[in-house]
Amino acid sequence: MSKKLRIGVIMGGMSGEHEVSVVSAASVINALNKNKYEVIPIGITKTGKWISGLETVQILKNNMSVDNLANRIILPDPNQTSLVSIEGNQLSLSQPLDVVIPLIHGTYGEDGKLQGLLELANIPYVGCGVLGSAVGMDKIVMKNLFKSVGLKTPAFLNCLKNEWGNNQSAILNQINKVLSYPLFVKPANLGSSVGISKVKTKAELKEAIVKAFQYDRRVIVEESIEQAREIECAILGNYDPQASVLGEIIPHHEFYSYEAKYVDEQGAGLEIPAKLDDEQVKLVQEMAIQAFKALDLAGMSRADFLINPEGDIYINEVNTVPGFTKISMYPKLWEATGLPYDQLIDKLIELAIERHQEKSRLKTSFDEIDSSWQNNY
Image 1 (cartoon, rainbow, N blue to C red):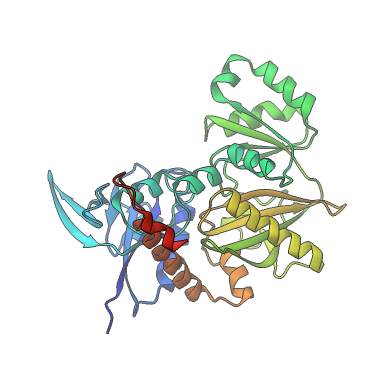
Image 2 (tube, rainbow, N blue to C red):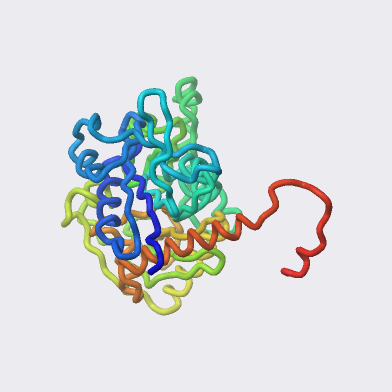
């Protein structure tokens, strides 16, 4: 009987999406096959403290004291590949990790920082690498990359917090000159619709920008595609990514807000598969795969699209750590495509190991030129 893989599931984090992350992680932990995997819950509190124990989910979900949980961290040391216990001033190896599933949404988890730690620790992990995670999280860089490969995305402008503090009037004038209302105002690096406002008049713009700056030092302002259909496509794979069937979000709120996604289960309807013609389906799937490759993504992503009444298709954004809650679109799309939830998680773990093994074969130092590599190409 082969040994179980030790799977670390990281949740929580210092992010506005802390609570969402815990719900996603709880769902994945429940679905992991306990006959195949030894599951090790790893929590990061809102203050950045790392904890681990069977009660991790419950403690983070209910904002309880973490005093009774072991303080365990991952060190950026490729010789350990384990959780390390901290007791007083002493470090000791605790639990080896075969694969990590990072399920922290938003900053300090989805943006490449956690992925960088796992790279240094030489631990295989599910999902995108450092670069893909970073650009997939940053709406400004992401949309500029979309434009660079010819993907249509809504018109936008961006500004820095210090620029806003120095010259608000000039920024407001530029936005009003270049973009057409209504507008969406968003933090550049956040997800789950946190900090987002829909602005219909000039009078509302300043307050929306100030709100977004509470969450990030960079803000993006983009035109709203009015009366648009919201279409989503799930991508799975490393070097030969596959697209799922498409789904449509039918918001019952003004837009697909945080409340609609995670609080109010009646906040939005999900239609899977989306009612589109074959040509539209093919184009959306091709655009989703093109975005996946352009941003150097891996493992998984969910691409979100807008289709206006004239039929024009815009890619809005990608999510590199899509929600895994019971009402989340990503697992629902793959289930409709023929890949059930538990098998989807199995596949993501396989992709993580595959990608790690390939990277492990790369040279990390320059020495005498070896021509044998040509035999592999």
